[in-house]
View 1 (cartoon, rainbow, N blue to C red):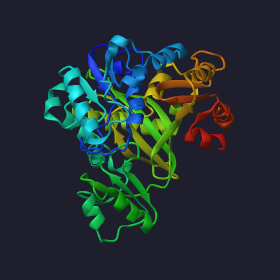
View 2: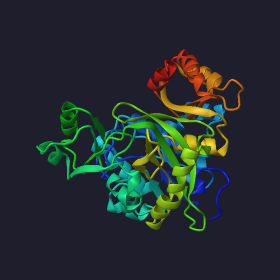
View 3: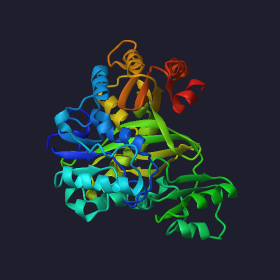
Length: 419
């Protein structure tokens, strides 16, 4: 397989791959997440703008609605061709949740995906789907489990683990003294959904309540006093003659519980000596070990840096993440400015939204302030993922204010507007 010149999923996956950026609800894959259906619709649509020519995208019908599809095309954001899209049945919509959603998704993937072609953010554990996966599901599940970082990351780049509980009930019933501050993590979880940062005993008791019914393993680890929170995206080509590579670095925006909110890509950050030193560790120590375990594709690590400029890899993400699409688009030159990614909403008519976005987000327009990557609409409420484009970070507050004045709502932009 010759590598693609563009930085897309096709650069790392072989032709015929069918990518579903989806997560089973609850724990139907040994993976804890709290992504509601309307957000999963957005998440699953992200590969549409970065899949490249040889990878098909599996997504929900909401991304193919005529207005949504037409506007994304008019903005110049949509890269996918309809023949490279596998659309899930329309009955799997944002009103279907929990076990029923999982059942319908499993059935649809069994019927729609090709043998040996399916790649899923976190695979279902269903023997009927086993033959569908391109990468055996147990490999992805093992690598996405935070407990297993010790097998491929040198110990000096890991936070200390204080304790481990077999499930939420064991954690809840524990009477032993747990050192504070600490981080409580569901060992296999995403986007901060299974993370609680505890400074006080009250916060620790709340974490016990939150995770009491979980069957997954609970980890108690050191709280790194970080001064910077990075994400690094990497790619490992399926072709073993091609080397693993770093796609892009970005800074992560999280709330007080570590939940991912967005990220900042600052052009040139990858050239700084600090980043180059950690990049060398990842390329020479970490990724060769990952490849040796039979995994390939795009993924990322959450990386903290403390005041002494020591780096710690705290979370593995062997799948697309909330920043992958922006990192790929930036590395490919489709986004040519520094950017702040966010999720936004807009309430109004299709005509109002179209007018607003054509002014803010038309690719190549000299006045372009946003780059949309996904979009859905439900009864006049538009949800979208986008990047706010800027030249210097000092420009962000003013730009955020300008976008918010256009009826766009976003907690990330609200925070940025007063920074």
